[in-house]
Picture 1 (cartoon, rainbow, N blue to C red):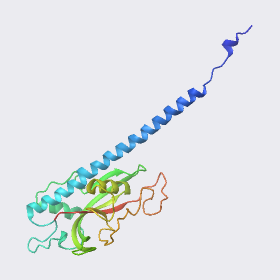
Picture 2 (picture 1 turned 90 degrees about the vertical axis):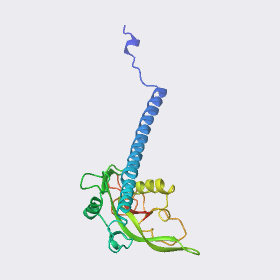
Picture 3 (picture 1 turned 135 degrees about the vertical axis):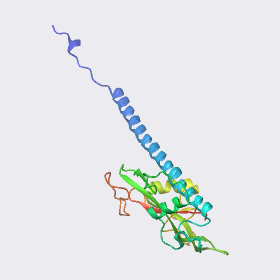
Picture 4 (picture 1 turned 45 degrees about the horizontal axis):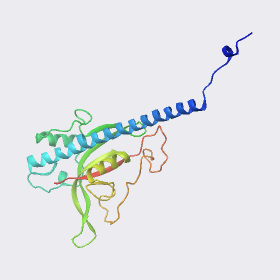
Length: 229
C-alpha cells in the first residue's frame, strides 16, 4: 500500500506568495532609489566641479587681467569678446592659458569645456560651456522690468531635469525666468510672472512634445548663468 504522505506535493500558500511579491517590490524600489541617488550625485558633481568651477575660472581671469574674457585690453568694453558673440572652445582655452588660469577638468585635456553624463533614459549627453554678452532683464528704476546687456556663462545641452537641479542649487527655486540661472529664451523677458522651463524629460531629443521612448535621447535646453563681472 502506497504511502499517501510520500506522494503528496506541497505548494506555495497565498501568504508565502504575498511575501515573495513584497520582497520583489522592495528590491525594485531600492534599485529605483539607488538610480535616483546616483543621478543626483552626478548632477551635483556637474554643478560643483564643472559649472561652478568655470564660474571661478572666469572670475580668476578678470582678477588677473582686469577685463572679462575676450575683451580688449586697450579699449575695454566690459563685454565678453568685446561683442555679443560667444567665447568658446579653443578661443576660450587660449585666453585662460594666457592669463595663467587653471581650467576645470571637464571631459579631457583639450575638452575642458565639456562634461559627459547620462540622461534619465541612460543615453549619453554632453554639456558644454561658453561665455557671452546677452540681453538680460532687470528690475526697472520705477516699475516693471527693463533689459540690459550682461555677461553670462552659456551652458548647452542640459536635460530639463539637470537644468532644474542646477537652477534650484543656484537660486533655491526652479524658475526659467528669474534668478541668476535662466533658460536662454527667457533671460531677457520682461514679464512679471514666473515661468516653467519650456520642456521636461518626457520630450525626446530635437522635439518639444512629451513622446520620448526608453531608447530615445532626452531633449535638452540651454541655460544662462549670470556672471558678476
